[in-house]
View 1 (spheres, rainbow, N blue to C red):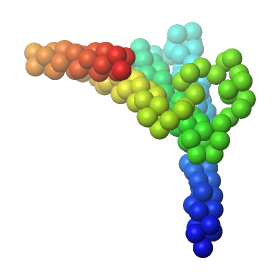
View 2: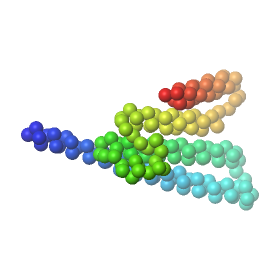
View 3: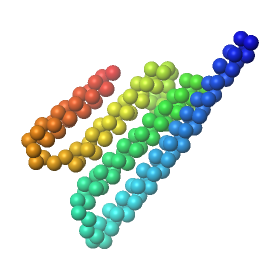
View 4: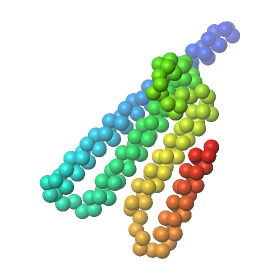
Length: 166
């Protein structure tokens, strides 16, 4: 009975493949949809700058779309890192990744803490990008808004500093 239970527990690690496959699907969807959105933005850009269509505040629209795409690409990268990390921690080492010179250290996961640190750094970048996107819509009609903006930039800078130090 104990042997059966131990084999069942050990075999249950393959359930983590559900998380791996879900992350791969989510990553692919984010990459494809963000690339598609950037393609549509390129068409709009050509229409505005080369065909004379008039769109009010087009520059802010372009910057906002680009920042959203960067945010989505970073989230897709988080899903990729998580999928690779969960696979390596629970299923087995990915031989082709360890043999490749192109697989940077960010994709190599040796422990749960290592995975957490790598994900934390990318998630911090997502939060910084999201903050930057919100900054585009801030109006400086009130001195308090300027103070809040400065405090927000200081906090983002400190987060980047402490994230890099660790």
